[in-house]
Image (cartoon, rainbow over all chains, first blue to last red; front, side, top):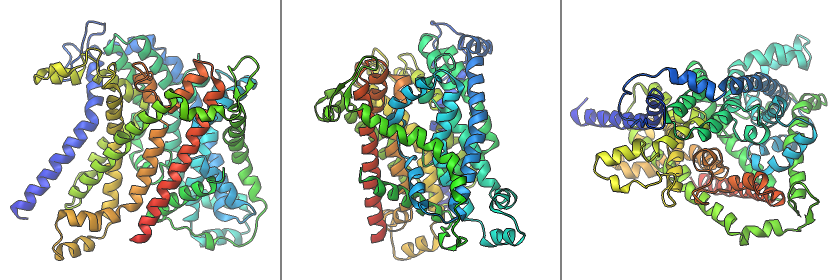
Length: 275
Length: 323
């Protein structure tokens, strides 16, 4: 390797490093800020370590921000929404990928349309629908609405995954005398396991991040992001505590990201139609 | 709504192409040939749920949008006036102007920067790319509301940005109300937040695309004596057209629906300096009791998103055909 190309290589790494630093600076900064002494007089600069590490801020933020309640909501909603979305998507995606039936194209397009219908277009009537069903401020409102939105992406995703299955798999199953339901669970689902795992991870991320629906439909059953928004609105003067709250809300998704990086990258790069 | 089939086709062609690009071929012609009516049973649960909470509300919303209604008392017939407000209501116009300005930060800049860097980086093999990818992905992965809270602090009058400017002797630039409290800086400040969130995603997507471009194309270009700029327009840019199409569509849809960060960082303020259409829907629905107008705004926003998605796909498809 000659010198000029080595210079290029080094310049490229410097460039990438700068990009990475810009990407994580606000995150590291907010973490440092969360450890400053709390109170309106404390002003974390973002460039220095805190004078003392106030880990107790996390306990205070957890209590003042009522995160026990909002985390419970977020986990309950995700625990219902993720399996429901994945199972409905797997079943419907399988039909779209392997069966021929009248209207299949139109129905599939209708689902795809869901990828670009903004929630703002449906939120007004949905509010009155949910109220009429007596579901305002319940877990059910979030579970049902999140699932109904998620299947649009899920079906698109699973259909593509099942289409990639070799035809011989289906034929072998048929020769063995399996009906379509057995073929799905015994042959296709095991084949598409990586895609299903990716979908599961993306569903969880979508559910954990959901803010607009929680804002509109819940008061006492806020999700973690909605709880954080309300906390930061009430404690604008206390940078350390609000920062601790932001870190608390980021932690679950961060853990999932660390454990499922591959799924995240694949899902977001190849399938993040909804962003 | 006769544009929708085309929009859908656009969306399908985008995703379809991407699927192909990622090696998942559309094997429709190889499907088991027999018709299966049982398919409806497989699709029914998802479709009923989806139709009830995504399609039917569009019909209801269209109905509500034809009335002046405060959400409580009897509504009065409004005809299309909630829609024609689009052209006469300064608040609505202002919202769309803001969203157009945000688009520079949410779409144009991250795409331009991402392309530029991907082109630079395409000339070498990068070791440790996985680690960089993880770091660059964090802004996108972490909950919007949490990152918006972090940036609210970054923009505080005593926050890192102000502290930094004061340290380098530019303290007079710092607005007295902080960056988000100033009429001139609030919208660009939200924009920079969006740029930060979108940039890493664009770069990673483009880098992944660049690596799929055969090295022989670059070698051929170099043999022809192409410099870096020629090479970019002759090899890199055409090679990235599917990625570009995806990113342009996604980021434009995303910008048009911007809500979370506006709600958290500025509440549309100061005044209405950062008000955007999605925020206006929420505000008219829940704060100013203009429910009919909120419904019309939501449907207008959707139609604009359809139209823009369709137009982008049309343009990008034509470009692909020219190649």
